[in-house]
Image 1: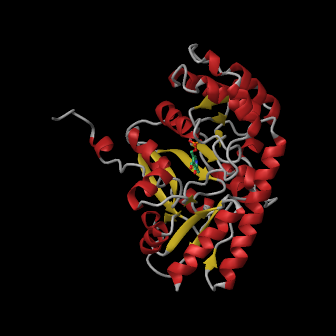
Image 2 (image 1 turned 90 degrees about the vertical axis):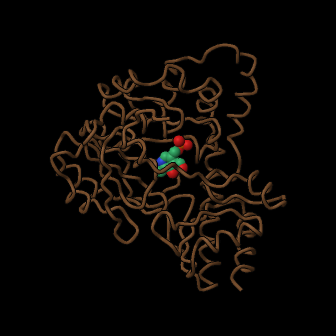
Length: 362
Ligand SMILES: Cc1ncc(COP(=O)(O)O)c(C=O)c1O
């Protein structure tokens, strides 16, 4: 049957998520596997978030607060920005979709770093816009190269900071220069899904430009550092008039009630956030040292994942690791046929990865 669908929809390559643990165990008949493939929080969800939800399940027969009042107020206090500049989403993915619906028209051009988070291309295509891939330079987003691709139809630029899958950051001078040179009609979406993990003091947040550059939108999520990926909560911070437009296309109850309550509570869970950062940073340093000892090149990263050059086809290594119950990501589809991406796990999970890699390697 022909649904009369535009070609730009038919041409979308579906997003392929990390392999779920349940699927691996079903397919291979194994148990006790380890997933280091989707940059999730290895400690689980924020305990304060879990406790808050437990008290709220009796209200599930009610619709959520469509305006997300409590969560937005809490975010406004936390970020020190007025509440009318915050839009909440069903994960930050949802914000990407809203931005595309509000800002993009067929034929508009959208600059996407390559490789980066694959959803940028998908949301641009879903609005009929044309994604223009701008290659990274030494695994980092190259604002100068992005600028060189700006044309009369450019409408949006994505900056993933730190960049997924490379973990490299954009520093202040580079972002300053890009913003100063872009025409005002170009909206810069700074995706900071992994910002909490950054240790590089020179990395700059999009929030720093909130008062001076109305065309900068900053996206954050509760899926990573706060451990709430399954609940789906993210938010965008932007100029109030743009937030007002996004709220017009936002589904009225896009963030469910448990997600709102959990996210509000998680923002008060400093203990959990600090523990998460400790586990991720120690795990990152441990794995880098161990891989160096094995003569493998691991790339430095400011996020909770990193790339490893395995020196042979990454798909093969990915498959071989699956047999040992360890899920990572092959980077072949991202243009790095010999790289895998590994999310930092608990200390025992990191050791499991190394043990499996040693078996695959020798
Ligand atoms: C760079 C980046 N942005 C956004 C997201 C989406 O996060 P969320 O769970 O908030 O939709 C991810 C998820 O992996 C990501 O890596």
